[in-house]
Length: 67
Image (cartoon, rainbow, N blue to C red; front, side, top):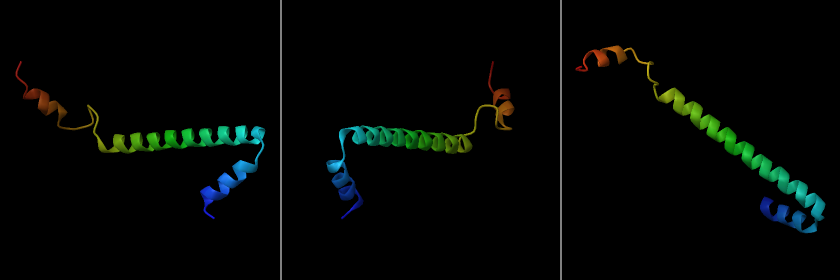
């Protein structure tokens, strides 16, 4: 029996009050994981993409810009 099958079996036997708690926990956990993944992705992107003012060449770029 797979994990999903075992979980479905337990859900079928559980009272509604317990199912409500289990559902709330599942939704909370999914939301937390999504937030952690977004945070990790944003941190990785920030390390890869230079920000304005992070490069030494920025001033030379503007010096070559015609007024």
